Amino acid sequence: MTKLKSGLTLVLMPLILVLMTSGYAHAQQPSEAEIKEMIQEQFERMYKKGVESIRGRIVVTGGVKPFAVVTDTGDKNTTLRIRQIEEMPADIALEVLRRSLIALVKKGKVGATAVFYTTANPNKESEADRVLVVEMEHIFGPTLAQLVPYTIVDGKARFGEQVVVETEKKIFNINVGEESAG
Image 1: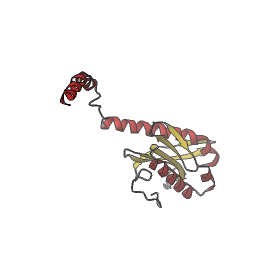
Image 2: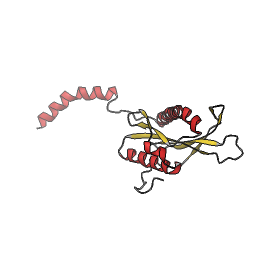
Image 3: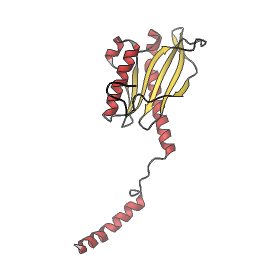
Image 4: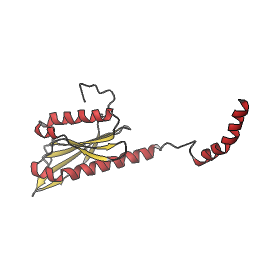
């Protein structure tokens, strides 16, 4: 048995040395800066895809029912709309969408989410009477909301200066129970 072990060691040693020098033995984890950059890129792609999706809809109705853009674990973006939401009041529709996203997250299929919806502008001094809210969450932690005031002028949506704020997790919260999404 000892001869077999030493024979295998002699045969495998050159392979082990090659693997160690080629980086396989010490595969580097992405740096914190690289992770932040990846998250930022995913958030930007989801935001862009969502805004492109609502431009026409927002003009016709003045707002949109909640929908999401998700980045799956393969880094592919997909727009998620639930047909039944169109018939629901906005607050219930938002809750149904969030619960659906939580179910997808629990299955391990989603790495990032961006939930889009519109609401009345709470800032009465603003020229914009509506706000586009985009709640973005990532499996690695960042949770942000972009608030973009807008108004419809001459059949076109005019977006104002966006504000970005940190928010609480609603989708990737591992303590979320079955009965409550937030």
